[in-house]
Each structure stands twice: as C-alpha cells, then as structure tokens.
Length: 394
Image (tube, rainbow, N blue to C red; front, side):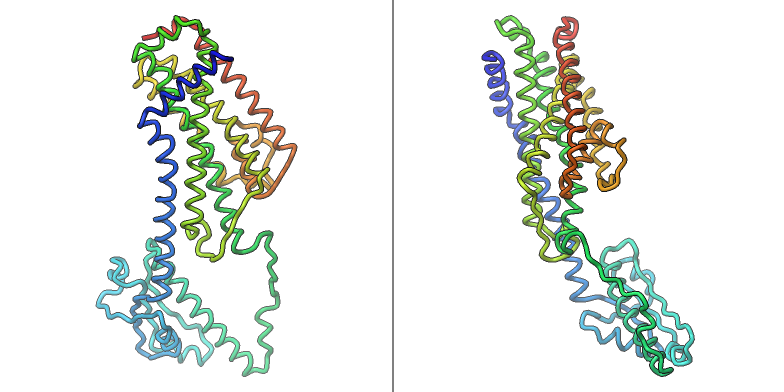
C-alpha cells in the first residue's frame, strides 16, 4: 500500500502540473455551464420581457371591429404598417400580422362563426410568445361574447364550465419545474462526465508514458505491476471525481445565477436536496467513474501511442451518451429492465433520487451491479497490465 500511495501521489502531481489537464478537467466544466445556462436564461428572460413590454404587430381591420379595438388598447401592442405582412413576419420586422374581416362584428352579432387570420413565424421564439399573448386576448373576448349570448337567453353562464379542475400538484409550482429540469440534466451530465472525465488522464498515464519512454523505468523499480496499476487507477479516478465536482459546482452556480434557464419563467423557483441524497448520488458517480477509469486505463495501455489511444477511447465517451435516457425514463413507473442495463441503471436511480424517491430495492440492485462492473473492469485492466506484448507494444 505504501508503494501504491507513492505511485498515486506521483501521478496526481504530474496531472496537476499539466495545465492542459487542469483546464480540461476543472476550468472548463466549472465555467462552461454557468456561461451556457447564463446566456440561455438571460436570453429567455430577455425575450419574455421584450414581448410583455412591446409587440410589433400589424392589424388590418377594415371594419374597425371591437376585437381589433381591444387588441389595439393593450399597452404592449405597438402598431406597425406593412405592405407585405407575410415577408415582414418571416424577416422578423414584425412579430404578428392580424387580418380581421370587414364583416367580423356582423357575424358575431348574427351569432355566426367569425374568422381572424393571424400570420406568425413558428420558428421565432418571440413570435410564438406574441402568439400566446394574442391568443389569450382572443380567448378572453370569445368567452365574453358567449357569456353575453347566454345572458341574453337567460341561461346561466356557468353552463360553459361544468367541470372546474382544482389542481393539487405534488410540488409547489415554483419548485416543480426546476426539479423536473434538474432530474433531466443532472443524471445525463454526471454520466457523461463519469465516462469522459478519466479519459484525458488515462491517455496520458498509459499511452503517454509509453510514448515518452517513462513506463519502462517504472517497471524496473521495486514497485510491482499491480502497485503501478492501482496507483494509476486511483489517480485517474480522483481526476474523474474532481471533474464531476467541478461540473456540479458549475451547475449549482448556473441555477443560482440563471434560474430562468431551469424554471421556464416561473418566479421564485427553489430546489434543494437532502444530504443523504447528495451522498448516494456522489457514491454512484464515484463508482461509475471507477468503472470508466479502469476501462480507459486498459485501452490506453494497449495503444501504441497517445494519438492511437485517443482514437480507441473516443467510443468510450459515447457510452456516456446513454445518460440521455434521463429524458425518457419515468422513475415512478419504469420497468425493472432499466435497472439491469449498464449506465442506464445509474441514470434511472439518480433521477429517482433527485425526485425524492428512495427505493431501497432499486438502490441495492444498482449498487450491486456497480460492484460487478468495477470487478470486471479492474480484472480487464489487470489482465492488460500483466501482458508483456501489451506493455511493450509500440
């Protein structure tokens, strides 16, 4: 263990001395997500505030209808002129174009169906937001018309709403959206970083040492190959964990500084996890990082050069893409099959934990599989490290 400790410290020092490793493993995960979600959140908030404050709209209302007057009276409606409404909407000069027929009020008064033509750009976020605002006004106006018609016939207007849904949500409205978004993003990102985090270190400590000619001198020391393997493996795992911590920190900063990116405009969104939840998620992430670290080291040792190792290890990072299964796994009624699929099972359990579900049976199954994966991956790494034709493969 003393030799393993020496190798571990030596490899860790080398990695932290390498500026490229620090940038790739710590700085980028720590800063990338606050920047990405910062722009995303501020952009969404800016668009929403912009539409609520001012909407550039063209209204063609030859009959000067009451609906047209109602829309024009809104504070955030800014009327524009246009010779070609369709192209102006398409080019973003205006958000919406409304055409109200001359006989609109006549049809309403005669209790006939009255059409209104709305031109929008369904590829524009602002145009879609403006459409929602106008739809709300039209819906309000339609209900007022129907209500007036019923009153004229001495019919109670409550007949329009025979069912009144009283919604009781499992979470507070301001917290539910943030919780759902985190249950989609966090498992996916943790799995991706558990898979990709050890790759850079493993490439350097395996194929990199071969290329630099420093592996052979290590083998001539009193340190056994297994001691070297364990030292390198623990160093790679540590770096992978540091990368995951940097990512979680970056995500935490993002949620604090740019809550708009997580709550879809719902104000006051707050979300927190219990310490035991964080500990279990951390344990699963560490175990998964160990699996990928052992596999990455095995592949790196097999490769002839640094470049070849990068080529071989690229598919390993793609396995981390299985974290995207968080987008379609529904923990509350998922099949047990998901708990027996590598990587997917970790995603499922992490999502359960984020949503406040502590299913002991699921946790035991996944942790048991994790231990099996670690034993298999370490056995593979040991096999590769003990083969002379692999160690000296150049």
